Amino acid sequence: MDMSMNFDGELVMDFFVSMLLIGIGVALLATGMFTSYFGAGKSQKIGFALLFFGIAILAYFIVLYPLDENTFMEALISGVSVLSGMVIGMFMILFVLMKVDTVDDLEDLDLEDLEDLDLDEELKKLEEELNQADNKEDEE
Amino acid sequence: MMDIIFSMGLVGFMLSMLGMGLLIAYYGSSKTRNVGVGFLLLGIVLAYYLVEMPSNHLVDTSDVVFWNGMLAFIGGMTGGIIGIVIFLIAIIKS
Image 1 (cartoon, rainbow over the protein chains, first blue to last red):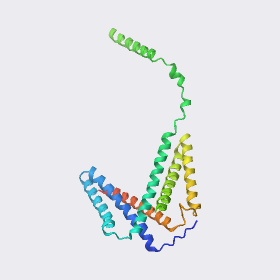
Image 2 (tube, each protein chain N blue to C red):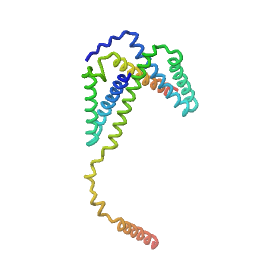
Image 3 (cartoon, rainbow over the protein chains, first blue to last red):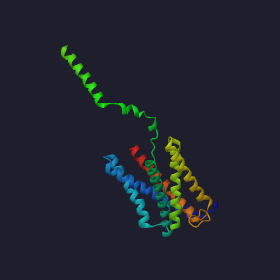
Image 4 (spheres, each protein chain N blue to C red):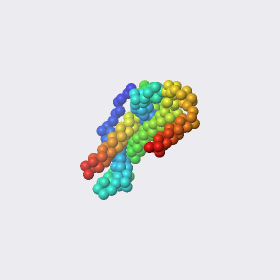
């Protein structure tokens, strides 16, 4: 495995720091939107501040465009691709787990007892017991 | 460009298989555990494919572009975590 990346410091900074800032921006934007909408009083104000900083960070990349276009797009596409791959993997795992019959202890259940139960008979017994209890109370 | 999308997507898929496979294999019981071990094996096979087969045309892990993508991914994840930590600190301290 060849681990020689031949990076110069500038390129590492371009890829890592740009995506770091984008990550912070997206996280602040999302949490800011959530908090400013659902929060009340002080929390709502904090939400607006977070939203402002999130928009400011993302606007820095969109308006001022501090990086070479190809480098930035490459970094963005890489990040989005990995996240897409992770989401696809998670969905696949959920799908398989839902499809696999995970309840395999049904054989241990004594279903014969349930089959032998006569519900009507049990109901009649209960009614009789209730009637007897009512009769006793009336006699007293 | 398609090479980057495919190779980085495969890395993400491998990471989720390894992570979720480990969790399911450890905490699952009976059939679920078997499924978790299956996911874990799939993740290991994918990792082996990514690491040991740099000569194929689809994924070249010896390429600088691949490691640039990894750097971008690690940076993005770290940034997201830092953003959420900032949010939590702001909410807890208020």
